[in-house]
Length: 252
Image 1: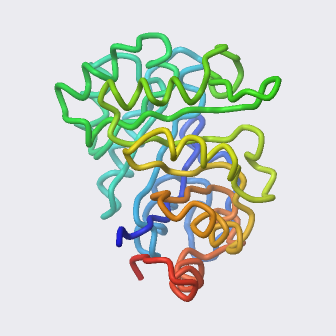
Image 2: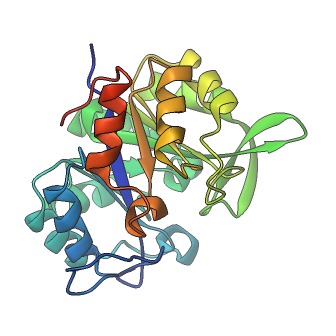
């Protein structure tokens, strides 16, 4: 049985984690380095680092902070934001990332996924997709969820898998930050469309939301969240203990 992963996400802007943080014992509560270290030592399976305004501001990702985060943690690190070329992949991997997440860059240049998979292997290439319902259909949004591309999300994700993406992160704009649970309907549709690992993101507000995710979609690979972990509303070790008690296979 595949071990399910629990993944905190650091949304970084101007070198700071932007979804507020409330932990005792952290020297700088909005430092990605301090927070990354905390998660690495407290049960997270992986860490995701998004430079959330790099694509919108059309600049390169902050590599100095990334290098510091990568040298601090001992769990796999996925990095995204402003990834538009093979040179961006190269730079981020050399800074210590294990996987590179591409979103708007792949929409602009769909060949990027295949090129990166060919050079670095599909295990390094993560397709991150921001999805929102538009007139009853799932649409792909670009530039940090600001721009409707008109692309059908399920077709886009299938295309990404065929091009060589080794993992899909599904960000539901409709549920993001609402804390009323993951977007089960959308996640089921994505999970049934591909065979590579799918990571659910957007909507987690409680331990029960993660339990519901893995109950409703037993084949989904991972759950990702930000603010409930950053604010200390849910401790990852407590979450994993509850999942294990519910029969979900997790690394304790």
